[in-house]
Image (cartoon, rainbow, N blue to C red; front, side, top):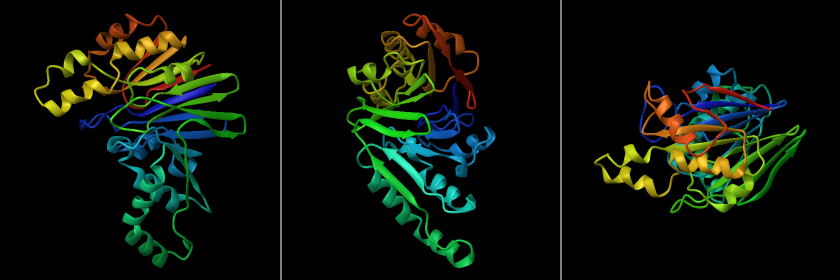
Length: 275
């Protein structure tokens, strides 16, 4: 079994009820955080997971809303771990530069804490692995594979497939439909996909918001991706505009027009067990 916990179903549009894009994936004894949008550790704490419990941080891309709380994940893991706790960060090319810049911005804080606490003698240990595609993790029965996606002009971007004990989950990140995502998802049990409502976004007067139409999947497109891949469960997240109370069946109906399987959508902290 793999457990999915939506720790952030929001988007760059600030929503008091939804943290920024982030998802926990629990496979066996390992816990992976996929992306780290605003408020992620608060939601993870509500799910019973602390920064010190993370096996690795996976980044689908380097858009600001997906990495807003990178500094919080790094710092909180550092100060709450009882011993050395290197944080593996797996992301697309460019990730190392972002992590280095984050650590540079944290330099004053790091120096304060080392000076103040006798049991903190070294800065945070962040181990970055950059991949455009291929196997990115293989440990204790958990295998993770990355494949490129299409979120241009944001590039490179990647999706992740987590395989464990005969079960597999794909986390698409932001993308339009593409053959590489189809291939990565084929035969998986579940697909976690970011979505927008094109019919609603088209009504927004601000051009910069309308611009998102050309590099995100609509609900229907995400559902069609799930159908082509033959997955059992589609989990929708990163709703734009924010999913309003009472609209759930509208979104679900749009997905059902393209996909006959189980459709899950909801608020932060939604848990979905996949077998």
